[in-house]
Length: 473
Image 1 (spheres, rainbow, N blue to C red):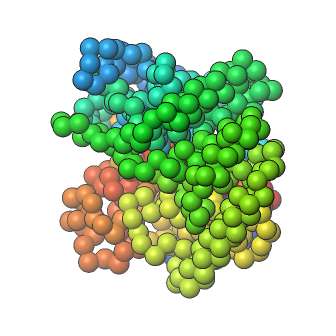
Image 2 (tube, rainbow, N blue to C red; image 1 turned 90 degrees about the horizontal axis):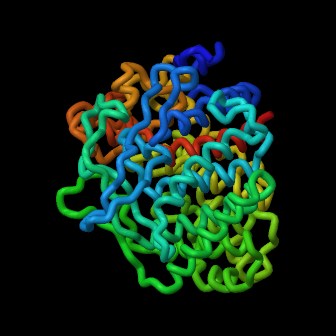
């Protein structure tokens, strides 16, 4: 395989990238979404940690095995071997909570549109008879196993105490690694995605499937006997926190997933008790209730609690209607009214809600809003920027992403965060003050609040691309 370049993923029609408010037809969108699935999915391979990436597969983003040293459990003399998994974002940390969002997005995408995923992504596992998206998810799950204690609790993250220089390669980060304390948000998310994985891998590797289910049950039992355990960075630690003060949604997600995996009334009863009305749009790493709802509807098992199923359905459709109303009123054709850090993720989370609602009750209105959201990502926005690296002349060239900075070129197939009205970094404050909220984006390696990338942004993008490619085929 030849070295990877941006041009390898850019079909000719990307030369006609979408400009400001430029409409385009379903056929062109369908071609775009299908062509993007592979590079957006390959991003996860290129983010692999703990193993060497060979130049035959990774091109200029190849590197020797990184972060293989044992990590100290913070505040103790205990060391653990926790190599593996995906680097989270533009840094090299590995964080359980956002990792589980990414895994959930990908598993739900495969369940909804398996035909969108091939065994030809150009990763070491390609050609093994298993869809490459499942190979990638398994790589992350194997790391997650290492983050679980014997009592079922799951450590929150493994990082150094601080971030390396922006142009550091993965193998250049050699500072001490730390495993940080168990949190119930991480434990609940872990339990949920392990339960989601068990049925999907049963026909591929029954031993692995059983291991996933055992780990899920073990984590759930820890939750049942534990008070909420939130996480905050200790003094002197400045890597990502992913703190979450409320774990009811993670517990709900886990209960729903274990009910689908086992059929046991015990879990369904817990899900009913934990359900929070109006949470059906919550697909963010801190608000996971929407994933519980998605699992109830996308799995093979019909929810036997008609009352719970009715509440979830009604809240989901009401949320989809609100998203459509905001989209139709917006001059930008999108549902978000605030441009928060990672605004592109919030927009695509809403798109997931619309597609899920369409599964429950087919509606051209839902699909029109979903297409409008994807069009925005692909360039139909005030800046005329296609927010996916390598996807045409208007795509980001200088993402806040250490492997890209080290290589001197943008890793292809990555979704950047997009406009952030809060101006959370110096580059944004200096260059974007006074601009409208929707234009507070800058293609600069210094702008971590508008131009960083993340696995849990790529995962929701891949989910939407896979499902839209099926709808627009």
